[in-house]
Amino acid sequence: MGVKTILSAKLAIATAATVFSLSAAPQMAQANECIAPSNPGGGWDFTCRTIGRILSELDLVDGNVQITNMPGGVGAVTYAMVASERSDDPGLIVATSTVGVTQIAQGRYPSGIDTMRYLGMLGADVGVIAVAADSEYETLADLNAAMVADPSSVVTAGSSGAGGWDHIRLLMVARETGLEDLTALRWVQFDGGTDAVTQMMGGQLDVVSTDLGEIAGFVESGDIRVLAALSTEPVPAFPDIPTAISQGIDVTGYNWRGLYTGGDVSDEAYNAWVERLETLYNSDEWQTAAVEFGLVPIWIGGADFEAYVREQEQIMADISRDIGVIE
Image 1 (cartoon, one colour):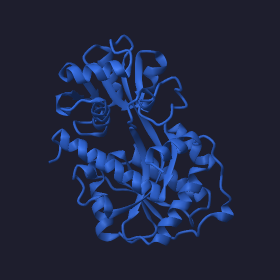
Image 2 (tube, helix red, strand yellow):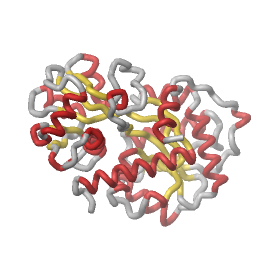
Image 3 (cartoon, helix red, strand yellow):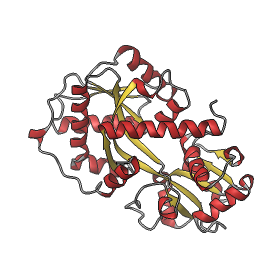
Image 4 (cartoon, one colour):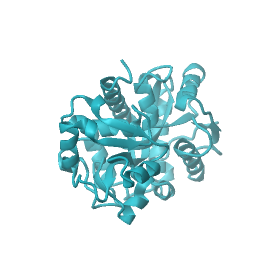
């Protein structure tokens, strides 16, 4: 089964959660810790604190989960520590996301993707390609035609620098539609999707690539038009937004939230974590918390998630080479 097929199936049932019987839960681990490779606040901190709390509430672990903030190098400091000091610790889990895998793909972590074992994705914010409400680009096909015909004429922007995830997922769309020289597409970095949208509405740029959760208010107000959601299925909160896939562009762009553990953790400990996290995912507690944080609940775990992470890392590395971020 392909990764996109897996994503489609999981997204379709994301809102139909069923809490597993606790009697079927795996044996509880001891001295559990979740490291958020960042300061308090933001996605990685939310992942650890929320998952840690729910693991305890559902008695999936013994006692409380210790939450540790370890900022540095966009996750690189934590990655190095786990690899060198705690690679076989069965009680350790670490928050990660699309951002972390992008850093690995670009060689910004001290070692490669195979250093860790990836446990599961529990939710994601969906990437979107948006234009102003009065934009000349009425559809994704209109935008794609312009990017291929004269890429330097289209000013694009998002909340990451060149080679960051917002940029890469727009380039994935451009490459899929036939743009060969990805460096020709103009990119402007902003501190957040809201700032980029504000400038777009003022006429300073043409297109914004960002997470839907960041700009949902502008969509609801009608100030902008979303040409495509980079998801396998329509977003439940905005079912009228067409996906890129439905328009013939086979690209997804999730900013997913998930966890890894050390590369030398045993199969038994790894599988136990996957089972616990799937149980947690299917709980009312997680489904509510994820939606409140602006995520679409999505579960991919174990071997399927390992395959997904590696596929994403390869895609990001390929595009990063194409635009000169890495050699």
